[in-house]
Length: 258
Image 1 (cartoon, rainbow, N blue to C red):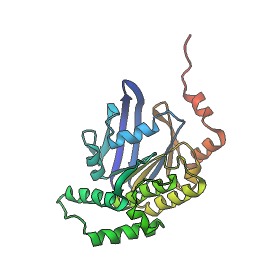
Image 2: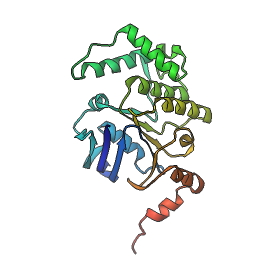
Image 3: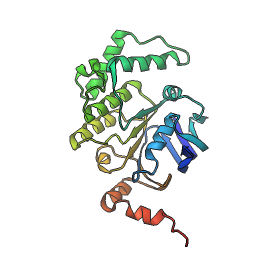
Image 4: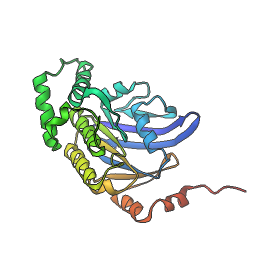
């Protein structure tokens, strides 16, 4: 069983510390949810795991199966088994969804040990159609330019399609529910649920409890001021739904000395 271990992680952006000693262990087959108010470092954590150059790791480590990923480029981290579904997926005019996914798959295959041949057009079409069937997507999606003119729900479903095709060991979903209505949240969540299993762990980053009505977490963590301050089960998310984050602020904000 593979593990993603975050040890005492400290991250800064332009000399401002955002993450201040975060610890988390995620195993394949587990679903962890990280919740917290805006500005607590949730998206910073997601981008740092994937190696965004804007974020400077000043302490701690991120270990994938015991090996630090900090010196890996983002594409190396992806090939090693990490996947990030963006909060705001970008459009790439002129590149179809199918070509984008096939290029990513072939990159994985070329860097495998030992290297593998590129997936054939026929095998790729069969695979992509099977994933689209799993996610109840129309086949015409494959011929559209990546995210160009897509609705918010279509963008997020395309992210889940990429997740299904690449089959990572760990998927990080950065506020996948952001900007979606209830029907779109349900559709995207059903796609993620169809992919859950012993070979994939998921880290669901969200501000609201509503997506957790569909993607049932094994563990819920509250992130506040750059740290995980509370951990528990689904009942923790329900408490936040009922009471908001005021009790977290009252408990963990240090009083100012006078």
